[in-house]
Image 1 (tube, rainbow, N blue to C red):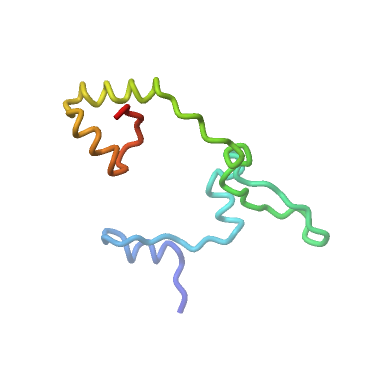
Image 2: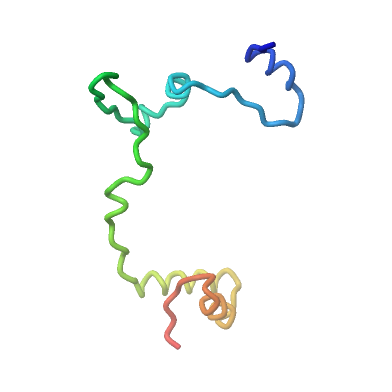
Amino acid sequence: ARRTLQQWRDLFAGSNCCVSPVNTISEALAHYPLDARGMLHRLEHPTLGSVPQVTFPVSAALRDQKRKSFSVEESDRSFSRLLESGFSENEIRSMRDSGIISLYMAD
């Protein structure tokens, strides 16, 4: 015997259980605003026509960016803020040396 979506929802109502419907592709694309968020493009298929495709989540602009050069000025500001927050110079060095933070400090 098959149950409707509403019957399943009623069955699990009030339970501490994660339950959600299994949507068709069309239902999922209609329910989530992928198109409005630029996360959907269409591929022209010779027999199927326009087929929706989820766009690769990392844009080419982000993939091709180079790392910013290291800024001593930014490190100086970060170092000052850590001191103002109550960390000692030795604690800051320890965090830097253990890889918790990335900070330029003249040794």
